Image 1 (spheres, rainbow, N blue to C red):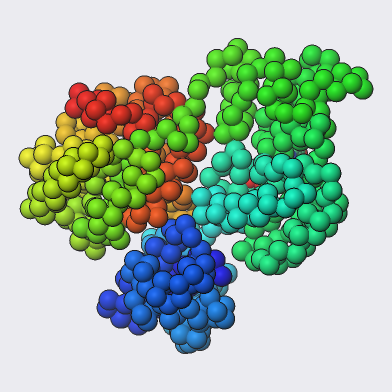
Image 2 (image 1 turned 90 degrees about the vertical axis):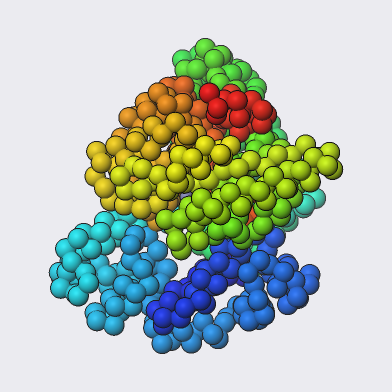
Length: 575
Ligand code: DGT
Ligand code: CA
Ligand code: CA
Ligand code: ZN
C-alpha cells in the first residue's frame, strides 16, 4: 500500500468522523493524511524498518492511528474504515473535485436523496432535486454542476508531483537490471507537465527479454495490455499506465526526442528536417538512406541547425524559432534555489517546529528560509495575531543567534502569509508588517467575487508598500478548484508598478502561477519566487516541482529571487 493510498483512507476517515460530529479526531486524521502524503519514504518501508514504534515517530501519529496504519500495511484492509463505510456507503473520493461540498453537505445529500457518488449527484442536479433541499439552493446547484464539469474535464490524468515517487521507484528498479544500459523516462513526465496521462519509458538494451519479463511481473501491476520484446504496456494498481520501449543505441536520441514530444514540437521539427532535405523519424535523422544524426538529442538539434531545447520548453510555443536564432534563455537549474520564502510551522497549521525545518532545509541544501505562518483571520489554522508574531520573531532571533554561534551560514527570515481581507485590506497592521523581512499576502476567502472586484481587491493589497510577495496568485488547485477570477494581466501590471514578486507555489497540485503566467511575468520584468508552501519538512522536496513549472515558464535564475543569495534577495525586497 502506497503513501497516497494510506493518505486517501485516513482522509476519508476524517470526513466520516466529521459527519459523526466528532470534535478533535477529524483534524487529527486529516493532519496525518497530509503528512503521509508528503513523506519521501514509503510508510510500508518505515514500518518494515521499525515496526509500530517507527510509525509513531511520523508527526501526528499516535498509538491508535499507528495501529490502523499497521493493519493497512499488513492486510490492505482496515476494519475501522470498512465499518464507517458500511454505515454510510458513499464514494467520497468521487466528490473530491466538487468545491464547497463539505462532509455535512455530502451527508445530507446521502440521507435525503440517497446520493452515493458523482453519477447520482449529476442525476439529482438534472432532476432539479438539489435546489429543493434545505440549505441548498440554485446557487449551490450551479456550483455543483460546475464542479461536475470540472471533474469530467480532468478525468484520468495524474498530478505529476504526486505520482513522481512511483515513477522514480520503477525507473530505479529497471536501472538496476544488468540488461539495461540506459534508461530515460520520456513523454509528459520529462516535459514536466502538471498532470500526465501515462508514463513512457525508453531503455537501451541488447537483451530485452529479461527486462520485459521483470516489467510485466512487478508486484504493483494490475493489468498487462501488451508484452513484446521491444514494447510492453501495463496498468498499475494506482491506475497509472506505463509503456516501456527498448530501442537501439544508434537511434536512442531520435527515439527519446520522438517520445518526449510534445506532439506539436515533433511535427515542427519534422517540417524543419524536410526543408533541409532530410527525414526525421523515431529511428533517426536521415539523408536518403544514410543516418546523419539521432544517437543523442544534442546531435539531433545541432544537425537541424538549432540549439538544444530543454524538454520543459518543448511545446511549440516559440522555442523552435528561438533555438534557430540561438537565443534560448538559460533556464534556472533544479539545484539553483537557495532559499524558501513560504513555510508554515507548528505555530499555526504546520507540523514541524522552526528548528526542525531549519535542520531539514539545510540538509536540502538551502541557505535561508522565511517563516510565513498564517494570520489570525484563518482561525482554524490558529493564525497569528500581532502579539504572537512578535513572540515568534524573538524565537527566530534566538535561532539565528544559535546558528551564528556555531558559525553556520544559514538565515531564518521573519515573514508572514498575511490574509487579504474581502476589501483588499490586510489581516495585520502596517506596524506589524514593517517589522518583517518577507511579507507574503494571499487570498483564502471570497473565491467567488466577480473578476473586477477580485482583481481590485488583490491590487489594493499589493499596493500596500509593505507587501513583498503575492502568494499562490490565482488560487487554483489542480483537479480540485478552479482559479478565482482575476485579470492576470492587470495584476502583473500592478506587480510591476509596485515591485511585488509573484509566487510559484511549488505544491504539486497548485503550481500557481502556472507556466503561461510565469512567461507573462518575465516578459513584463516582474520577478517570481518559487516556494514550497511546506506544512511539513517532507514538503520541502516539492520545490523541485516549482522549479519545473518555472522552467516550463522559461524562467532563468535571474527571474527567481530566491535563487539569489540572501543579501541580494533582501536588498531587492527593500527597494
Ligand atoms: P500524456 O501522456 O497525455 O501526458 O502526454 P504525452 O506527451 O506523454 O503523450 P503520449 O504518451 O501520448 O505520447 C508520448 C509522446 O509520443 C508524445 O509526447 C509525442 C509522441 N507522439 C505520440 N503520438 C504522436 C503522434 O501522433 N505524432 C507525433 N509526431 N508524435 C506523437
Ligand atoms: Ca505519456
Ligand atoms: Ca504513452
Ligand atoms: Zn495560503
